[in-house]
Length: 416
Image: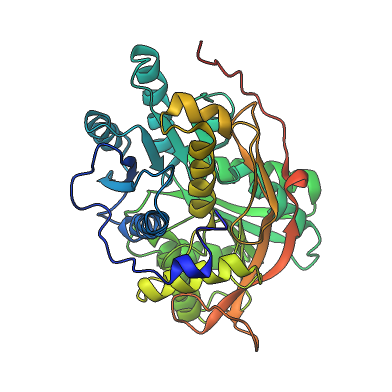
């Protein structure tokens, strides 16, 4: 992965449209099932842009084992049933590698569908590569051999966030606000449980859920937060639900600390800047820009140059594709049954920092260095801002991969 992200590769022309013409017989098809319309479309489009960029970069170097990479997009509108319809379309089109990240309810549906499909069609097996659906059930009670998770799950992230909050003695009251689906409830449940264990003096003054990607005015929710007297807010909100929440908070003059999972996703940095909340918003993530890792800096500069209007990078997508390509190369095959065993136990130097990650064989959960960062005015010498705001993410904490490992309940059924 380092090699094909090197500067020389990134200076080559990346103008070909990946999801355009029909693929040749020797094409590795990546089926991308994520929101490309509706309230979450901006988040899904960023993922598609990055997959196109990565595929073009790999193809400019001769592809993977001499095969070109094609990205085929399927709009799921963050709806589980729509996702399954699109998944069947992808399978019918010969796609055997499925990539999805937005919506754990969608992820759970895809995981179950793929598992059943593979049992019924052993000669047409499909693999599901998950870059952002992080309900812990996906790698615990619902785990599947054909599912690999490349983002830290909700419990791992909350463990790190609450360890950080534990040291902040100025926090006495916390308000929880989350999207009303499986992931949002996982975030809230973990926050309640872990805060009780680590800081019994902290009072949870609200535990609110709202519909996913349909609220256009968060001012009533912000009024409740303000009235509660909270010092801090914990939220797993992403996409427009985070951006509009911050917008309403800024308009109401709400001054609290924000502890988030996805403040760095598209629209988040702009919302923080517009709300004038320098160094008040924290996020837990698998990586940020400005860590000074040369291969990541080169790739990020090239990506930003191509997508000037939406220069947001999800390191987990680069990790996913890097490990996928490595597995395919080692197996000398793009068939899931051949390369899936290569992913199990794989060690990999991560995109953002070069720190070592590993894919646990027991549950197919990737453990990687994770970072706590805050967003504000970029210090002198900082290379990257976010979304052309002039502000950037700054590291305030780092947890090595081995310190993020938690037990799993997975009882994986392996194919014979």
